[in-house]
Structures are given as C-alpha cells and as structure tokens.
Length: 251
Ligand code: PGA
Image 1 (tube, helix red, strand yellow):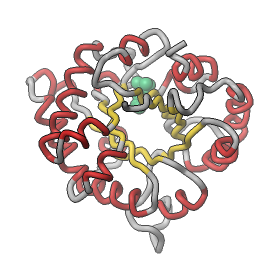
Image 2: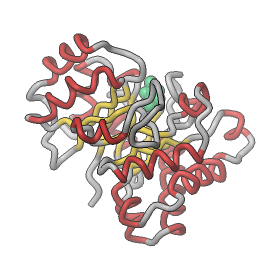
Image 3: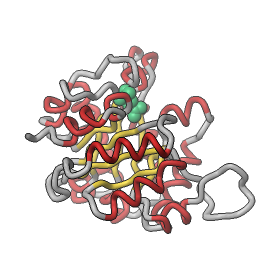
Image 4: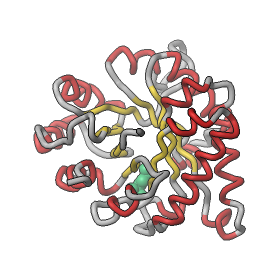
C-alpha cells in the first residue's frame, strides 16, 4: 500500500521569519506520519527552520533543488551532501520552472537524481507537458520520455522509493487544474512506463503526485484516483490553514 504524500512547494517565497510563523501555525495539526506524509519544499535559506521543526513533528522537509556534485568550486549552488547532513529528506528536481527558466536538461536531472540517492535522500522528480504538446496529442510520449531520462541508471530499489510529480505546465499557477481523469490517465501512463522499465513491484511502489492548481477544494477528488498518490502544491500551500486542509484531506 502506497502512503499518500502531500508536498507544499513554496517556490521563491518566504524568509526564515515567515517560515517560523508558518510553522507556529501548523504545530500539532499535521496528520500522523503513518497516514499521510506531509512535506514542505522550501527555499534553501528556510530549510534550517523546517529541519528543526521536523525533528519533533510529522513534517518531512524538501529542498527545491540541488547540484549534482557533492561539493567543490560551484559558486551559488547547493550541495546535496550538505542538505543530507542537515537533515533534509527530499529534493525536488526537474520542476518545469527550472527546466524552463534555468535551462535544466533531462541529463542534469538524471545526475541530480543520482546525487540525491548517493546522499541518502529521496527525489521528487517532476515531469509535465506544455499546452502546445497536449494540444498536439503528444503529452504521454513527452512525459514518458522525461521519466525515462530522469530514471536512467537508477536501480529498481531506488525507483521504488522515488516520488514522481506529474505537473502539466498549463495547470501550474493558472488556476486551471487538469481534470481528475486527465491527471489519473497520465499518472497511470507513468506507472505503466515504470513497469516497462523495471517491473511490476517497482511500479506498484513508486509514488506519483499530481501538481498544478491543487487546492483544498479539489484535493479529495484527485486523491481518490487509483494512480494518484499525492499532490505537489504551490499557491495553496503557502497559507497555514490551506496547507493543513490539504494534508488533512482524509478528515
Ligand atoms: P501551483 O504550483 O499549485 O501553484 O499550480 C504547483 C507547482 O508548481 O508545483
């Protein structure tokens, strides 16, 4: 049985003080970790506060990016080794904003996935098509190719523990959610692709999130779909009450 995983993605928002205020507001209100995994992906400067909070709460912490080398002369990058040592659990990689604005390639994302496992963390691997690709009917081929490239060289055991986030670019921050059926269809296609690349058990284990305008009003319907195991949520994760409504969607 796959454990649901709801992750907030704060993007480039909140300073450490605002992070602290948010954490005060959610204290004691997260679902039990054996029911739902609650994760916040935050800017690097906010991670310390989140890690401290996570030590005696059910929150898991994600970085929004890291470099693929462990350390060295890479000015301005974030070391996956240091993230792991400070207590970060997950790293989001391949977000469409990073692919689009910062020109990250499938190859970079694959190297980052390997660096994350090498440092005993887990990746949340994002994929998703543009509106143009969907209108051309090529979305499944596109997304499967992204996943294939991201997972290249990873073991079945590693993929079993990975999280994949399907985020159609046209649904991010636009208020335009993919329908639950569209999201399910792609999450199913991703699981089938993992089955083809690895095996049935790995496909059964890998957790697949949907992302793109997820909010308290639609989270239940999305989570009811058999291949959707969680959400990666931008806008609606930034306010404590809304984040709490998302992670407590079962209540
Ligand atoms: P959104 O962002 O929920 O604001 O659409 C999702 C994401 O980019 O992860």
